[in-house]
Amino acid sequence: MTGPRRQAEEEYFVKREAEILKARREAAERAARDAERRSHFMKCPKCGAHLVTENRSGIQIDKCPECLGVWFDAGEAEQLIKAEGQRGIGGLFAALVRGMRISGTTAAPHEPDKG
Image (cartoon, rainbow, N blue to C red):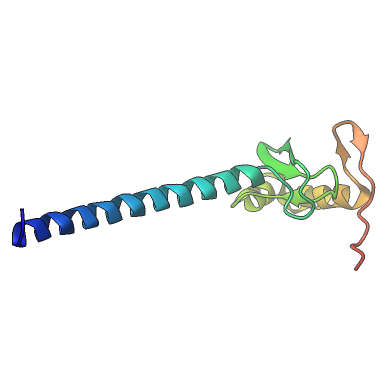
């Protein structure tokens, strides 16, 4: 087989191989993104410790037992303010300042980062 027919066949296979390589590359990139998401799920963005979830007025808030950080998902802070009002949210922040009880132990006050 020679001529235009062979050239068309070769072009088809080159194009098909490029499509396969592109699909494999995209799948590998997706897998890498998913693995990175899983490695960060429920981890404190400040210190990397595993976050614990606490129910406060029906809203799940994420707390770090190591650095005492409190993390809200999108809209949770607003929901908490509506549920508890200004006085209730003030109580939450007062508890944060005093040091929260996490998993039955009192967490140490936050120390500023050195450096």
